Image 1 (cartoon, rainbow, N blue to C red):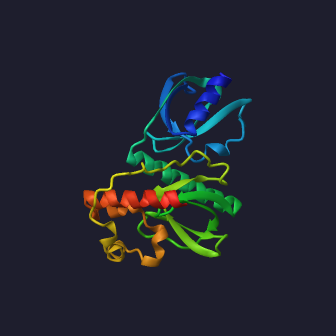
Image 2 (image 1 turned 30 degrees about the horizontal axis):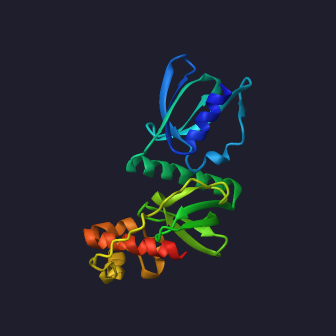
Image 3 (image 1 turned 120 degrees about the vertical axis):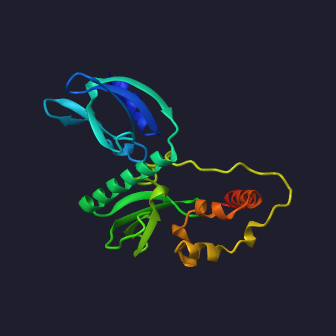
Length: 234
């Protein structure tokens, strides 16, 4: 049972996993869950009632946190790719966990993707600021000494960099095609940002995906090439 449990936790930390466990009434529960971005916070097994042990996980079907007695674990399935809606729900659930941790413990380490695709490792506390759009989480950055925000769907996880290794892999294929494209640089980025309520000096809170409706195929390819060149120079 211990090996089965370890296998489940390892897979949950990497993404969405299907698994089966017995409920208190003896019936079997078929679940799809994840610990992506927060699995490293599990510190062994925690006691629950009469020397039983439980595991908490985020259930992508119920869109909420659930738990079960570890010794009732029956079967562990394979990892699968999450949908965009599931990704949003997972990020939102993790941000709720982040908010709870900040409220309880104060300064908290976490990470998210910036608009340029790089990762921002931050330390922050709760802020009085509120994002009315519901797309961003506002916090006070204790490293920078100022209020900041990040897009919820860009959230990676809670913890220091060493805790979050392997949780976020994003890369571009290197392009060697020398064909000329419509220049992405000719786009009026400032106007595009303004239409979405983002100031040009606040581009850290803007996701590249928001530009996609404004791009044709050639410009998108040009953007990828420029991003690849930028990554190669870092």
